[in-house]
Image 1 (cartoon, helix red, strand yellow):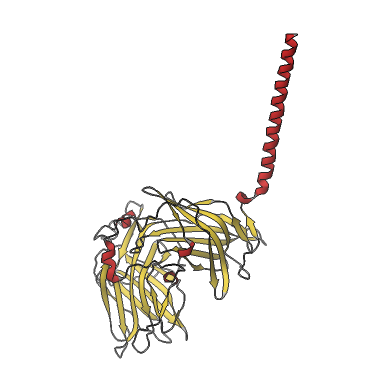
Image 2 (spheres, one colour):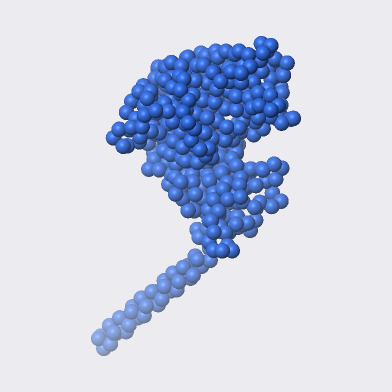
Length: 458
């Protein structure tokens, strides 16, 4: 810490926890990769059960002071990490890493007009997490998120093949926040990179605090301001009460739908310009312990993501219980012709009460929904995307344009073969002709037999 002193106050435990002690080592960082650089499959049915005492997590409050002992940076949040690691038997396992009750914040700094603010925490057996913030005259924004986990921690990685600290560095995907406002987000959010999913909730944050007082003006995340009644994760104070209900599957297993899902309209903007348009009805087919159909409700679903010249990602968050992301890329089919197509889909099911991951799956080898760049792709009929052995995504009334959107409208659509009625016309005509010929042949045979029988009588 370069300016003054601060403290970290662990809050009451929430439902989920491996205890640990403060850590210290800082390894060399790996190259920065996109937040959605690598996706993977996580199957954590135990999280649904909410086994008491096994999945505990602690909220952390960081209050950094400047040289005059005034607050210059304040943060209070909860987070947990889902990590895939290679075991001694060369297979891959999933583990959950949570904040322990003992957390330090060595290296956190206030920041100023020329230096980035930094929140850095250390916990457990050599684990650490940090995020730095930059500012303009009007806004502040997260820049790099750095997470380091130590596979020497045998309580979390009992049979890790690779020993030592591993670091993942990603760009913070959050939008800029008005300077002198406090950022608040009760609903969960997540960042995926490498073999790690970072899940955050109950966030209260303000870097570059003015006059030592945290602002009363709030900037809410999009997930906290849905169009219908919000689904809010429990606060730190009532987590213990909420944990008594985690044995019930009600929060995470909605009733089986009897109808197709409603069609939602989603869009992304880059600045003031719409860069992605999507219209689709979504249904999940989850078959772990028993088959389960989940309809995505457009009224409670928040769209987020990022646009680019050759890559675009649409992330949909339905009430903080279902997260689906679609990644599109551009390919060159010839020297002058470019097409886009769906390349990756990731599905994560969360526990509404505490943000824990029940199940997650991904498939980054798709080559579907392709259309010429500058046009849109349309398929009104039902399609099925196989994400894993246990999870499928069904789409209805789909229309998507992830690149080159003009005037906030879809371009001319290229339709899927399922919608091409011109194929059915010759099939129907051919079938009708075949039936007609069969009738004529049968009538002819019957007529011949009657004539032959008449001659025999004479």
